[in-house]
Image 1: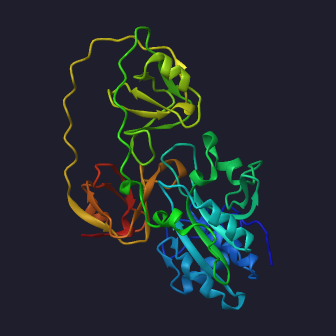
Image 2: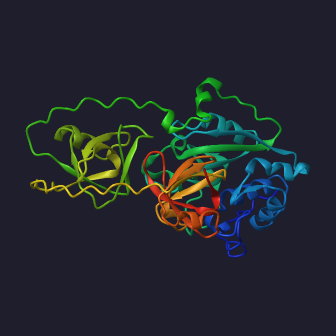
Image 3: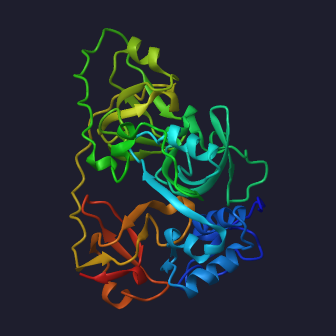
Length: 375
């Protein structure tokens, strides 16, 4: 049994191309590959991210750059380990009692977490191996000097609890997982997405009290939400933005800085929504000025043709480059996209090329041209 920490950004293999494509590297998208390497080594294997990469490539274990993690245990039948359970829990609390039970039974749990605080980047895999009070000791495949080695120490932004940090969990161990947790409690966690959740209606606007209104600024890059619940994002707010608070002054000040509280605000563009009260601070109110003449509305880019995603998980990015700060979200197999790239036909299917596309909800961004096909 080996519990040696391994890193995707290790100089020995960080530049190796991952999977069956020729653009992305282990350093860029190899967190799940590296996590699975540490898991199989714990149960008796002797692999590195580089060797597991080659083994899985030779056995149809990738869809493009994305490892088929469910097939990894089958490559090591002598270990007696298996993939015991998988739960997706975006938009609903993670099944903490089942995670704790699995750890007590000797399982290791790969979990997908928020990568940055309240930003539009939320996919990184780590391995939980031990409970520590209300936190978990983990093996994180991304090497960062002086980074905490616990789940909440590194990813518990804004006082988040473990059930909110974890977006997906996969149990690995020997034998069947004994599910001691209440099955009803977590039944809806599997396959449920934020879009399936009906948000609680927003409270009726509170009449403005007499007195000066207040304004706030985000302390970090922050989501403006349509409702005071997760899964209702309108836009991302920069730390430079000033937000007019629409709650009464006394109510707003009572909420400021408090975990779990939400402020109803309006940004400079006139968009109203809700922000986390613990991630903003009071600032000077910007004086009201006459509204300028509206600028001509630029029509949306014309669709040239449609494509569908051909890989299991495709990065949808704000810019045509691979970096943590460009990832908007992941797109699943057969997701249909409108191509708004005039040169799209010439780029389609070619390694190293990017297509500008628009999703069904109107969001524009870029995808790798070699992971989509004309629809």
